[in-house]
Image (cartoon, rainbow over all chains, first blue to last red; front, side, top):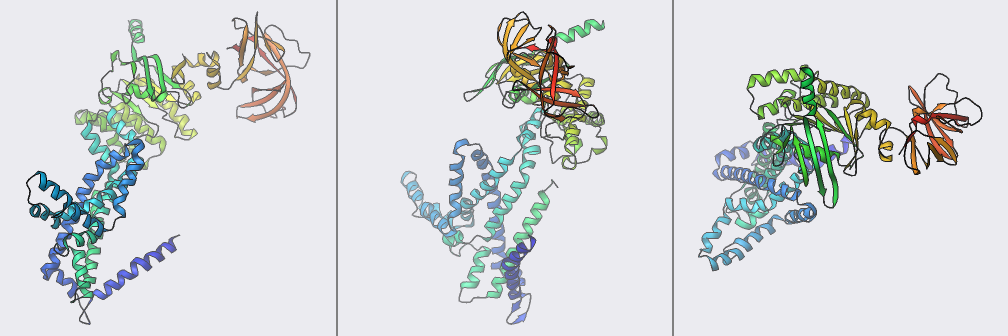
Length: 265
Length: 360
């Protein structure tokens, strides 16, 4: 049982990662940590690193806060549940590029809603849609495919929830706040943790949506890696180093995050 | 002085259901149930699944609002009183302990929610943990405890808020037989010592008979019979009650009047007085005894049936013998004796007294 799992992990995760790591250690044919040091020395890399972190933390947080009540509503929607779940899964089937273009078509400078708003309220389409092409715009676009992920994770948790815990707490005289913070949240804790970790990881690595919306205007780490690989001045070793940094950071953040909030041992 | 006080207590009701009903869709979960649980009384509610016993419990705790009728606790109507204000302690089938809290925190939860002073919480929690024999596990988390231990903590937690009523919803059905038996009598002991009005829901009639002051039998949302355990056992009000409470032989025939009952062409004697007509006669298996060989001559107070043994089951102290009489299979319980001589195919003469036959 363990052997095939290990074999798959080594072949498709361990080995490629090792190759990338190995390549990243060379600068001009010689072993060096230069590709890593450039994260601190080159402002483009540093900024893209922090933009990616800010983007991912925001989307993970907002996606969790929005997804939680929605997942509850869907869980309680009775006979419509199946339909709503199917609808929720639709955004997950789109590639990031499609999502990006969808936002341009809807909210871009000559987008559907932008023009509609312009007709009824006096707005400047350029000013209105400018927001879309900043990292905050990316947050909105990312939520489109992150919230469904949160909902799917949480509906499982809601169906496994033990409601007698809430009844026990209520019958013991606890008010709504106490029940929510002392009983409900700890009970859903593991699901919220894994859901928000998933959102963070997905948005750290997401690329297509940002590419379609902002080209390379908003510097996020995956975009910088892409330009390193595709530009005329391609520097594969540098791209490798940034990819390793992206992987390690994502893994570390999730580990520390889960360690901190997982009270229930 | 004491007599006056106890007489007064006897008349006081801990919990009262007045014509309560509840519909789910077009199904009557509970229909027009009126029932008074006296203060300090231990009342069990039994019945097959779907009989409305759990809905009834949830109406007392306030998590289900009755469509009609009224629930009263300590004489006061609970209409509009939310569960958290009812001071009702609940013990759930799945324990429902808070997994993120220690045993102590679980027991202290209700007292903290009700803002008791810290030292009083400590004293009370310690006393409760000692009462349920768990004082050395105060720092443990529920997942480190066995099912039986968890249910003890759940009981302590429910009693901590000094509830006016204790509700237990099949508290033992998730436990194995040995623990179930120990805990059953422990619950009874604790209930008797604290004198708390208790409503105990179970599908296990034996459990209900063994610990209750009175038993309420439910069927299809309605109250079928209410009485002390011995009464339910000896004189069930219906065929359903006779069948649900204990093991029974039910023989359908015609009552001739005059203490004569005709079953499969045989005339049997009964003592129950009723109008002639089709009827069911019930005899508990332990009321049968082997009879001496001889001619079948039924006397007015002794009935004798001749048949053949079809099988037997060893139950420890008892051996249950199945025997057939004119194609009908009846059960007889005998004290297990060494070298039990009866085996399948043997002829058997079974006797029972007219007084032990109950006509429905």
